Image (cartoon, rainbow, N blue to C red):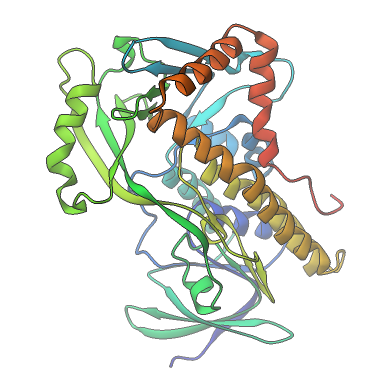
Length: 398
């Protein structure tokens, strides 16, 4: 085995937005940090792309919001469309104007947010290593050592603390023997990036099609005509033949002549899972390594960002000697509670409504409630502020 790399204060495992942004926050706080990512580059496949308004303040504090807004776009409107009847119920975040600093959501592929953070990390001189897959972790009272495999052989890295932000299949979590409790949904999600002029057919830039067969979540990705359309199908169907079944689904859902250009697609399993603890000694879990949810409503990455906004401050405070390690236990306990009590059940309810409204009576009750919200500004504002339930107040003295 090669000689261990020089120690740093924090080793961040995972090069997605949660990992990169934690590293950026720590580096800006004067903490020495190193990032390890298993893939050879930032993953480009269709993943999260909508950032709720409440997360934008944290991105601004990290110094990445301006560039993220330059590369993406903001929007306020969203629509629920009932597939069988054509009814459309419109909602808007304009009700937050004058109430919050950022009364809009941001659309930007999560790989682009990770790239923005990476550019700033490189400018700060933070080492970021791609193609490094973690397969072991050992700990002592003073630090941790991570073993990994690379294209040139095994290597070890040492640090005082480790942040595991390496996704739902976390190698760090597996190496520590931490289970991932919960369940996997019976359906498979299929995320597609397609070129189709939805706006010409009256679609909002975020549109939820409500139907037990043709349910879909549609969102504009950029100004080149690229949109994300995510639908679900039974996991009993072969994953390798998703592409053969896709045209029939899209033909039924797309208006007009239905002609589209497929840019990318990714089939994937959906989970509602969480680790029993988000802290194991000197290792802290964040993002999908700590918790995983189905993506209905965009609450997965949002939860990971809210983990980030309190974690890097808390850990920096511990490293400066301004905070006791108890603050990291509070991070672990509070972020797990928020996920289990708020994020996970809300995402599950969103999934049920959009994709599984089989009961006509319940559907009508749901739609009646949504119509009331759509026609009442105060109810819309209350609904919009609901995303705050996924946040955690700062855990340290800033």
